[in-house]
Amino acid sequence: GAGVSQSPSNKVTEKGKDVELRCDPISGHTALYWYRQSLGQGLEFLIYFQGNSAPDKSGLPSDRFSAERTGGSVSTLTIQRTQQEDSAVYLCASSRNSQGGQPQHFGDGTRLSIL
Amino acid sequence: GEDVEQSLFLSVREGDSSVINCTYTDSSSTYLYWYKQEPGAGLQLLTYIFSNMDMKQDQRLTVLLNKKDKHLSLRIADTQTGDSAIYFCAEIPSSNTGKLIFGQGTTLQVKP
Image (tube, rainbow over all chains, first blue to last red; front, top):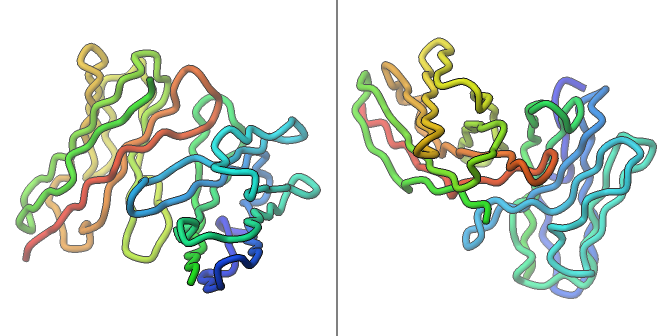
């Protein structure tokens, strides 16, 4: 597609439920990133995929968070047993690759609200 | 450690120039970026500069990099009300590939 597409754009769920957030990167981009934007913490890196390499999961805040990328394209970020502190905007970005300063292009994000 | 600092707020009048400043700690940072975020939207890439450059100009935008002081600035000439947004400075430190480290963001308010 023309840009990075994320769905849903908004998600409201009850504490304790599991949620899945989807990211469809720009066609041909091999690198995909997830970030979280919250009032208290600003923009934080969560996880990064580059081609078929093992993902860099160093930013995931707890073992309730996981992500996968199927077929080197679409990615899903899953949060299990959601907590109120998980409320944030989850942003996905993609780039041609992770080398040489290839710029990251962002989607509009998923606004997650935990009641 | 890796850290990026920005002032939180800037107010200017329409037609004036805006200068948004950013400092970073990793002297080996390779690329530095400016992103713009409008309400309810994601991050829009404005421009970026490689660390071996000291200036880059793109229409109304001028980026200045002072590597000695680890200081980056974004100048917007002839600021318009449509420039009102949050502006984020970000770096890719030398210690990793790809992961962006962001500043807190500067809210630019443009008064008519």
